[in-house]
Length: 328
Image (cartoon, rainbow, N blue to C red; front, side, top):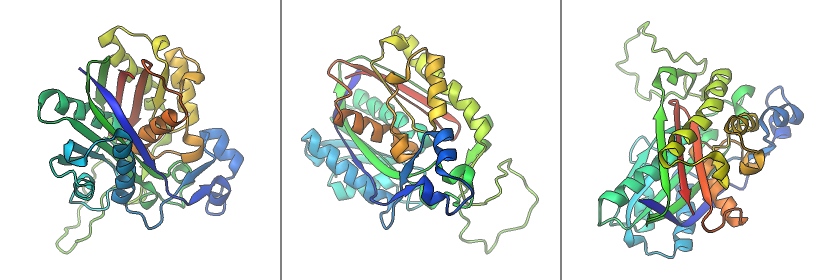
């Protein structure tokens, strides 16, 4: 059983931060950033909480799908930058959408989160006859956790949200979800301890040794080594289940992390960059929102046609990797 995408939508904050803007904060310049990452600018949220951006994206997707929110059976939120420890972002959005017959929860697989969530939603659609439609919402306010004095990370990330409405279908579908927690400490952001009243000092070391306690930390070299292998590996695992080759895929929509990663991954897959849909030059890395933002733009630009075979493929903190191959 596959899925059919009924509608997509996105919300992008108005504020644009260019590479030149960042050069005023850290020792860098436009040429240095663009040549190493492919990023020229990114959008940064102001007053908007993550749930609000996700809500607006979901409203657009539901309108395009032409469905009644009360018909939605499951709402899954993807975020690593939720506004609250609890409730889940999806709970807030579900209520404001009026999707009162839906179960709702958040899923955190970082930059692979949207792919994880679509595959999870498909399993609900397959196993529960009472669930007709699923809404998947990815929303990230990464500017809230990025250290803007660290040029190795602050140049990479942006904010934004996107959502997708799906139903079950008899079309081609295959997926792969994977993770390697043995290297979880190369990309992380700690939770803030807001109540240290009874905390006891200790020399305990959990192996997560970032200099900044509550900002995003990334070991770029280790993440790069993982990523260039993870993308083709995740595709290959899904592809072998349905005996399909990379050449037969009409469009890859990868996680938008770094242009060099995408170039190397395309080379390892044996496909040209023409098959890789790239948006990171305008948005940077928006974590779980990057793939659905790119999907929404690809559809808007008519890059995906009926019966096309596409691959959504990502990697992220955890370290996670995931792919979905589907027929449109």
